[in-house]
Image 1 (cartoon, rainbow, N blue to C red):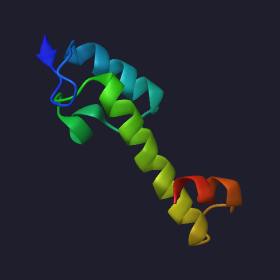
Image 2: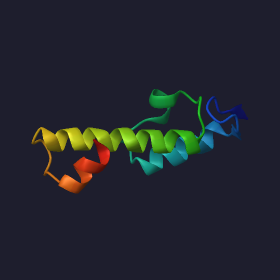
Image 3: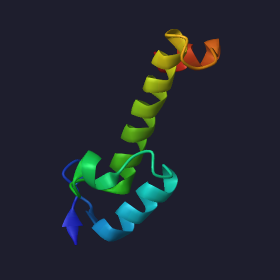
Length: 75
């Protein structure tokens, strides 16, 4: 068992990797992003926040359809 570097809980890296990769459907890779250092409870909200920030920036740049509520929430 691995100990999370953020919250210090023990977790199984393989289980977290599977859950993370399934949740983000290949848009993000647990090993590349976190290298097995943090649990799902710490990794998932961090990645989701980063993805939403990126989407908001793309909306501001005109690369995605603009959603003002979304942009206001994530920027």
